Length: 167
Image 1 (cartoon, rainbow, N blue to C red):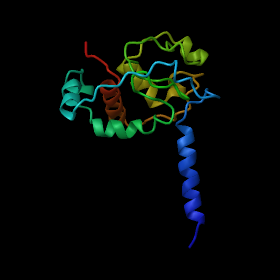
Image 2: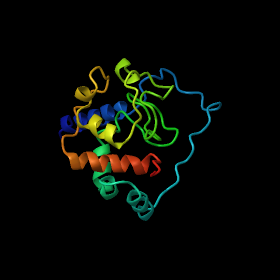
Image 3: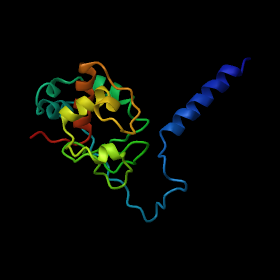
Image 4: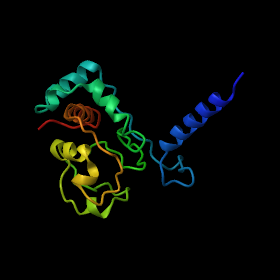
């Protein structure tokens, strides 16, 4: 019986779990005094498709399953649930329509603090293509998503999952 591959796999699982933990907290939060995060309403696939259809093109035709798969690249640094934790990156719930660097509980780069834009699909698309080129000086080390359809699907998924309301 070889234990080498099993131990290596266990180490990878442990490392992956550590990457998804909030970065800042040295001691566990006081759960007795902290309010519980509100439970996100469970939406059916039909509800999600109806919400998606209310968005402008091309996001109204996004493939939510592909968007969710692409979000897997983001979830080691970001959460999307209402009241979710900030991690290496800020919680993204409600990000659409918010001014850049507006989460008071997250320490942003000076570049993002000074960007002064409001997050919308267009800014997010440019950001996701190559963050460090779009905004030099950002702390976000993500290499980017080159495929435009993958970005559309990810943005559509984020719109639905973060509570974006079509205007």
